[in-house]
Length: 326
Image (cartoon, rainbow, N blue to C red; front, top):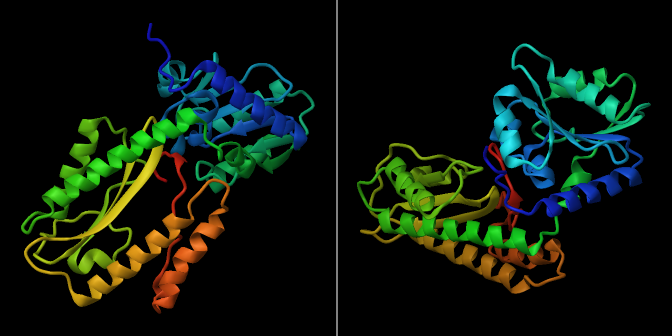
């Protein structure tokens, strides 16, 4: 029999579940049905990407019996191998109604159920499934707790930070491979293969985002994925990748020039503005500083350069646990 494969000690998951239960009591919630795979992973270790595609739930009552995992029966071995939950229930895909199982478990854990917490704004809860689940709760009020659970995960422990640092290391290796192999005649897909191989070879987990890559005239496609276009000398190549260690993510990105010809004057100007923006933001980074105070001075660089209306993003990215599609 395989032993459980967990990135943290069981006591850490128990502490997290205790923090959730305290929050549920404060919100006067009798039972929680946690559907988002990243929250399940944080709370009990259960690690299955299918949770973003098929309903699976961690059902936990602050004053009830031990938590229960309800999963597709094909994933029961994963539930037992990657989580601390002893009580695992299953349903048959295409035969059983998972919403009914989740509602039944909630009612058993909290007799007289009045308020049920569900991470309704998670992408793991499609509209039709959310409707079916709330209808089957037999009159109990459904409360969206996605934000409350996310706030519990905001402050990272030293062990979590160590995982994210390793994830960042994979991202750096991927960018180094991109710089080494971005040569005229190479296709975007071939370049992506070199990046992904370098990261995987080093130990990177599967990504929560696909490798984003565009080049030349395609470099305007901010979230484009690699094509069979061949790189030309002087092309701009935009790369965005996610290094991952035990599902903890660190995004890495870079825009580079294919050797053999200089970048255009417009490209060089935009690069200088972007570099100034980045450096201004990094100067603001220190413990205790609100995110808005980091972003504001950085984006002011772009506005002063007259490019404010062209900036469609935020200054930084959130970090932590991620499952595809993220």
